[in-house]
Every structure is written in structure tokens, then in C-alpha cells.
Image (cartoon, rainbow, N blue to C red):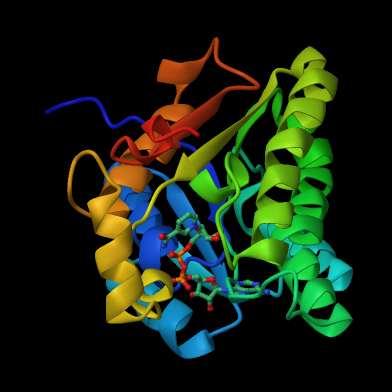
Length: 249
Ligand SMILES: NC(=O)c1ccc[n+]([C@@H]2O[C@H](COP(=O)([O-])OP(=O)(O)OC[C@H]3O[C@@H](n4cnc5c(N)ncnc54)[C@H](O)[C@@H]3O)[C@@H](O)[C@H]2O)c1
């Protein structure tokens, strides 16, 4: 039987109820990890953990809430004894533009997409040190590499995630905690399906591979970064985007 790449590891996946978080949870479970799926949607998260079987659990957890992180870490350490992998996947996207945004909207986006990632990295640093190392995989976006119209606040948060990944990778390397970031292009998840048919058409035309990505294609990259196959990789910024970022201005 092939080697299971996450055997013995405990992995937390935020926003794991659907989309690429759910694909990542499925793949990590297949690869032998004990998977902790977190989400704010208890129906989705609970159903997925049930489907994955005894090595998966679901925890209600809002990434933007500090107290939720403390409760999550306490529970995972009590149940599993160690934490080896964190995938900071939870995120929200809303269209807005220079002429049309509100401070409330900005606070919401920053809370989930940016503060959520900061809180997550801080929350797992101490347990990972105790475990002798770990891997943090942050999910940013191609929109965090190059700005496009109508995603003003979202783009800001995703640029921030890439920068914060570099800071955390520099600081945590001495503890053998690796921190990397994935920039998905346009991936066919419920988040993407919110886009109008017109915008989807516009997007697919811009993708050199001429199709949207599958959530599993992000999950496989997260698996690589989470596993010991990536033992010498930290601070990396990997775009999984069908080539959309080749269309540089
Ligand atoms: N789909 C794309 O095209 C695309 C492209 C680039 C980057 N991304 C990023 O990938 C990540 C996953 O996106 P997706 O497309 O799978 O999204 P999705 O909307 O399909 O799923 C996101 C999940 O996160 C959960 N969630 C939302 N707010 C949360 C919170 N505060 N705390 C915990 N969980 C929360 C949702 O309930 C949902 O289950 C996000 O960070 C997103 O910004 C997506």
C-alpha cells in the first residue's frame, strides 16, 4: 500500500464545510491525518465530519473571534495531544469598488480574511513548538497577487495574507514551523458560483488553461505543503491558477 503522507498528523482546516476546505479535509483524511474541520455553518461542517468517519471532528469556530481560537486549540490539544498542520482556508468574498464600499464591509472582510489568518497563526505557534514543528498553509488568492476591478477590500486582505505569510515564515522557522501561501485562481466552489454568468464567461476567457480550477487541485497543493515532502519549503508563495497570472499587465 502506498505511503499515507499525513499519517499520524493532526490537521485543522478552517472553513472546511464546503468548497476547497472540504476538498482539503477529504484528501487529508485519505492521507491518514486526524482532521478537525471548523466552520460557522454547523450543518455543512458537521455533515462532512460525519461522512469522513472517526478520524474527523467538526468544531464550530469563527476565525475572526479570538475566543473561538482559544477554545478550538484547547479542545484539539485535549483530544489529540498535538497539532501539526493548520490550513487557514476560511474566507469571504464580496464585490465592491473604489466608489462603492462601506467601512462596515471593510471591517467584515478584514476580520475574516486577514485577522482570521493572524489569529490562526498565533494560536497554533505554541502547540506546534511543543510538537517540535509544524506546517501552516495560508490560502490567499490570485487577487492577492494582482488587483482586478470590483474586489477592492478582498484584494487588500489577500495581499496582506501573502505579506503576513513571509513575516510568520521568517519568525517561526527557528522552531521548524513552516509557513507557506497558496494563491488559487478561479476555482469552481460555491464562492465562485456566486459570480454572474457574464463574469464567469469573462473570467474563463482570461485563463490560459481555459477552465476553472477544481477544489481538489488546491487540496493537492495544500497536501504537499502540509506533508514532509515539503520539509525544506517555507515562505513560498505558490499560485495554482491555470496560468491566469501570466496575463500580467
Ligand atoms: N473560489 C475561488 O475562486 C477562490 C479563488 C481564490 C481564493 N479563494 C479563497 O479560498 C478560500 C476558500 O474559498 P472557497 O471558494 O472554498 O469558499 P466557499 O465560500 O465555497 O467556502 C468557504 C467556507 O468558509 C466558511 N466560513 C466563512 N466565514 C467563516 C468564518 N468567519 N469562520 C469560519 N469559517 C467561515 C463558510 O461557511 C464556507 O464553508 C477562501 O479564503 C477564498 O477567499 C477562493
